[in-house]
Length: 210
Image 1 (cartoon, rainbow, N blue to C red):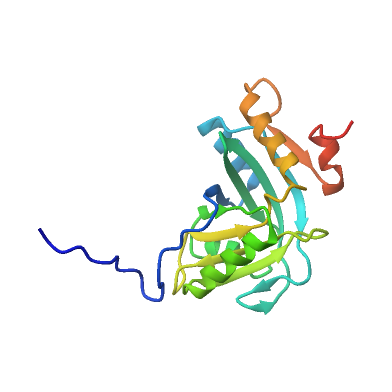
Image 2 (cartoon, rainbow, N blue to C red; image 1 turned 60 degrees about the horizontal axis):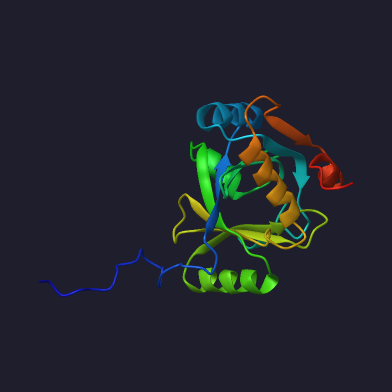
């Protein structure tokens, strides 16, 4: 019997990147979000997608550690059971991991993501990943919210990337729970896409407001 040995990690990674939250999301980068929603609904039965149009980020957005022009995106969410399925189409030319992915000739699963409920959990994950040798690609906050996200790549780059975020905060969970419930109940006889053009209308559109 051969002696057991420690895992051989990729150059620059010091130890296992196992965080306190499991992976809850698959993130897919696309060139045409409307075509992508139709494709994934017809292929997998995921739906209805809830699509947020023209989502802007705060001006403290950073790309590769430097303040940069923030991306503007259309973002669609659907669920398969408890697994969140995210589609993103970037609408402007701001530097980002999304455009890096498309420039590499790819379209599809660009990241996976655990999601956290508190700033403390996020800070712990951020410190672990940066301290463990992963490269920070971009980070920011959705405009008008304090909730942060950050994308990391393996040392030297590459895909898929690893996103962390604060989107399981109690203030956001009613919306996510509602989207998950809509997907669980959907039988294909009602529209496959729910449009949200203003984040202020999210509660009303999702039936969370009386």
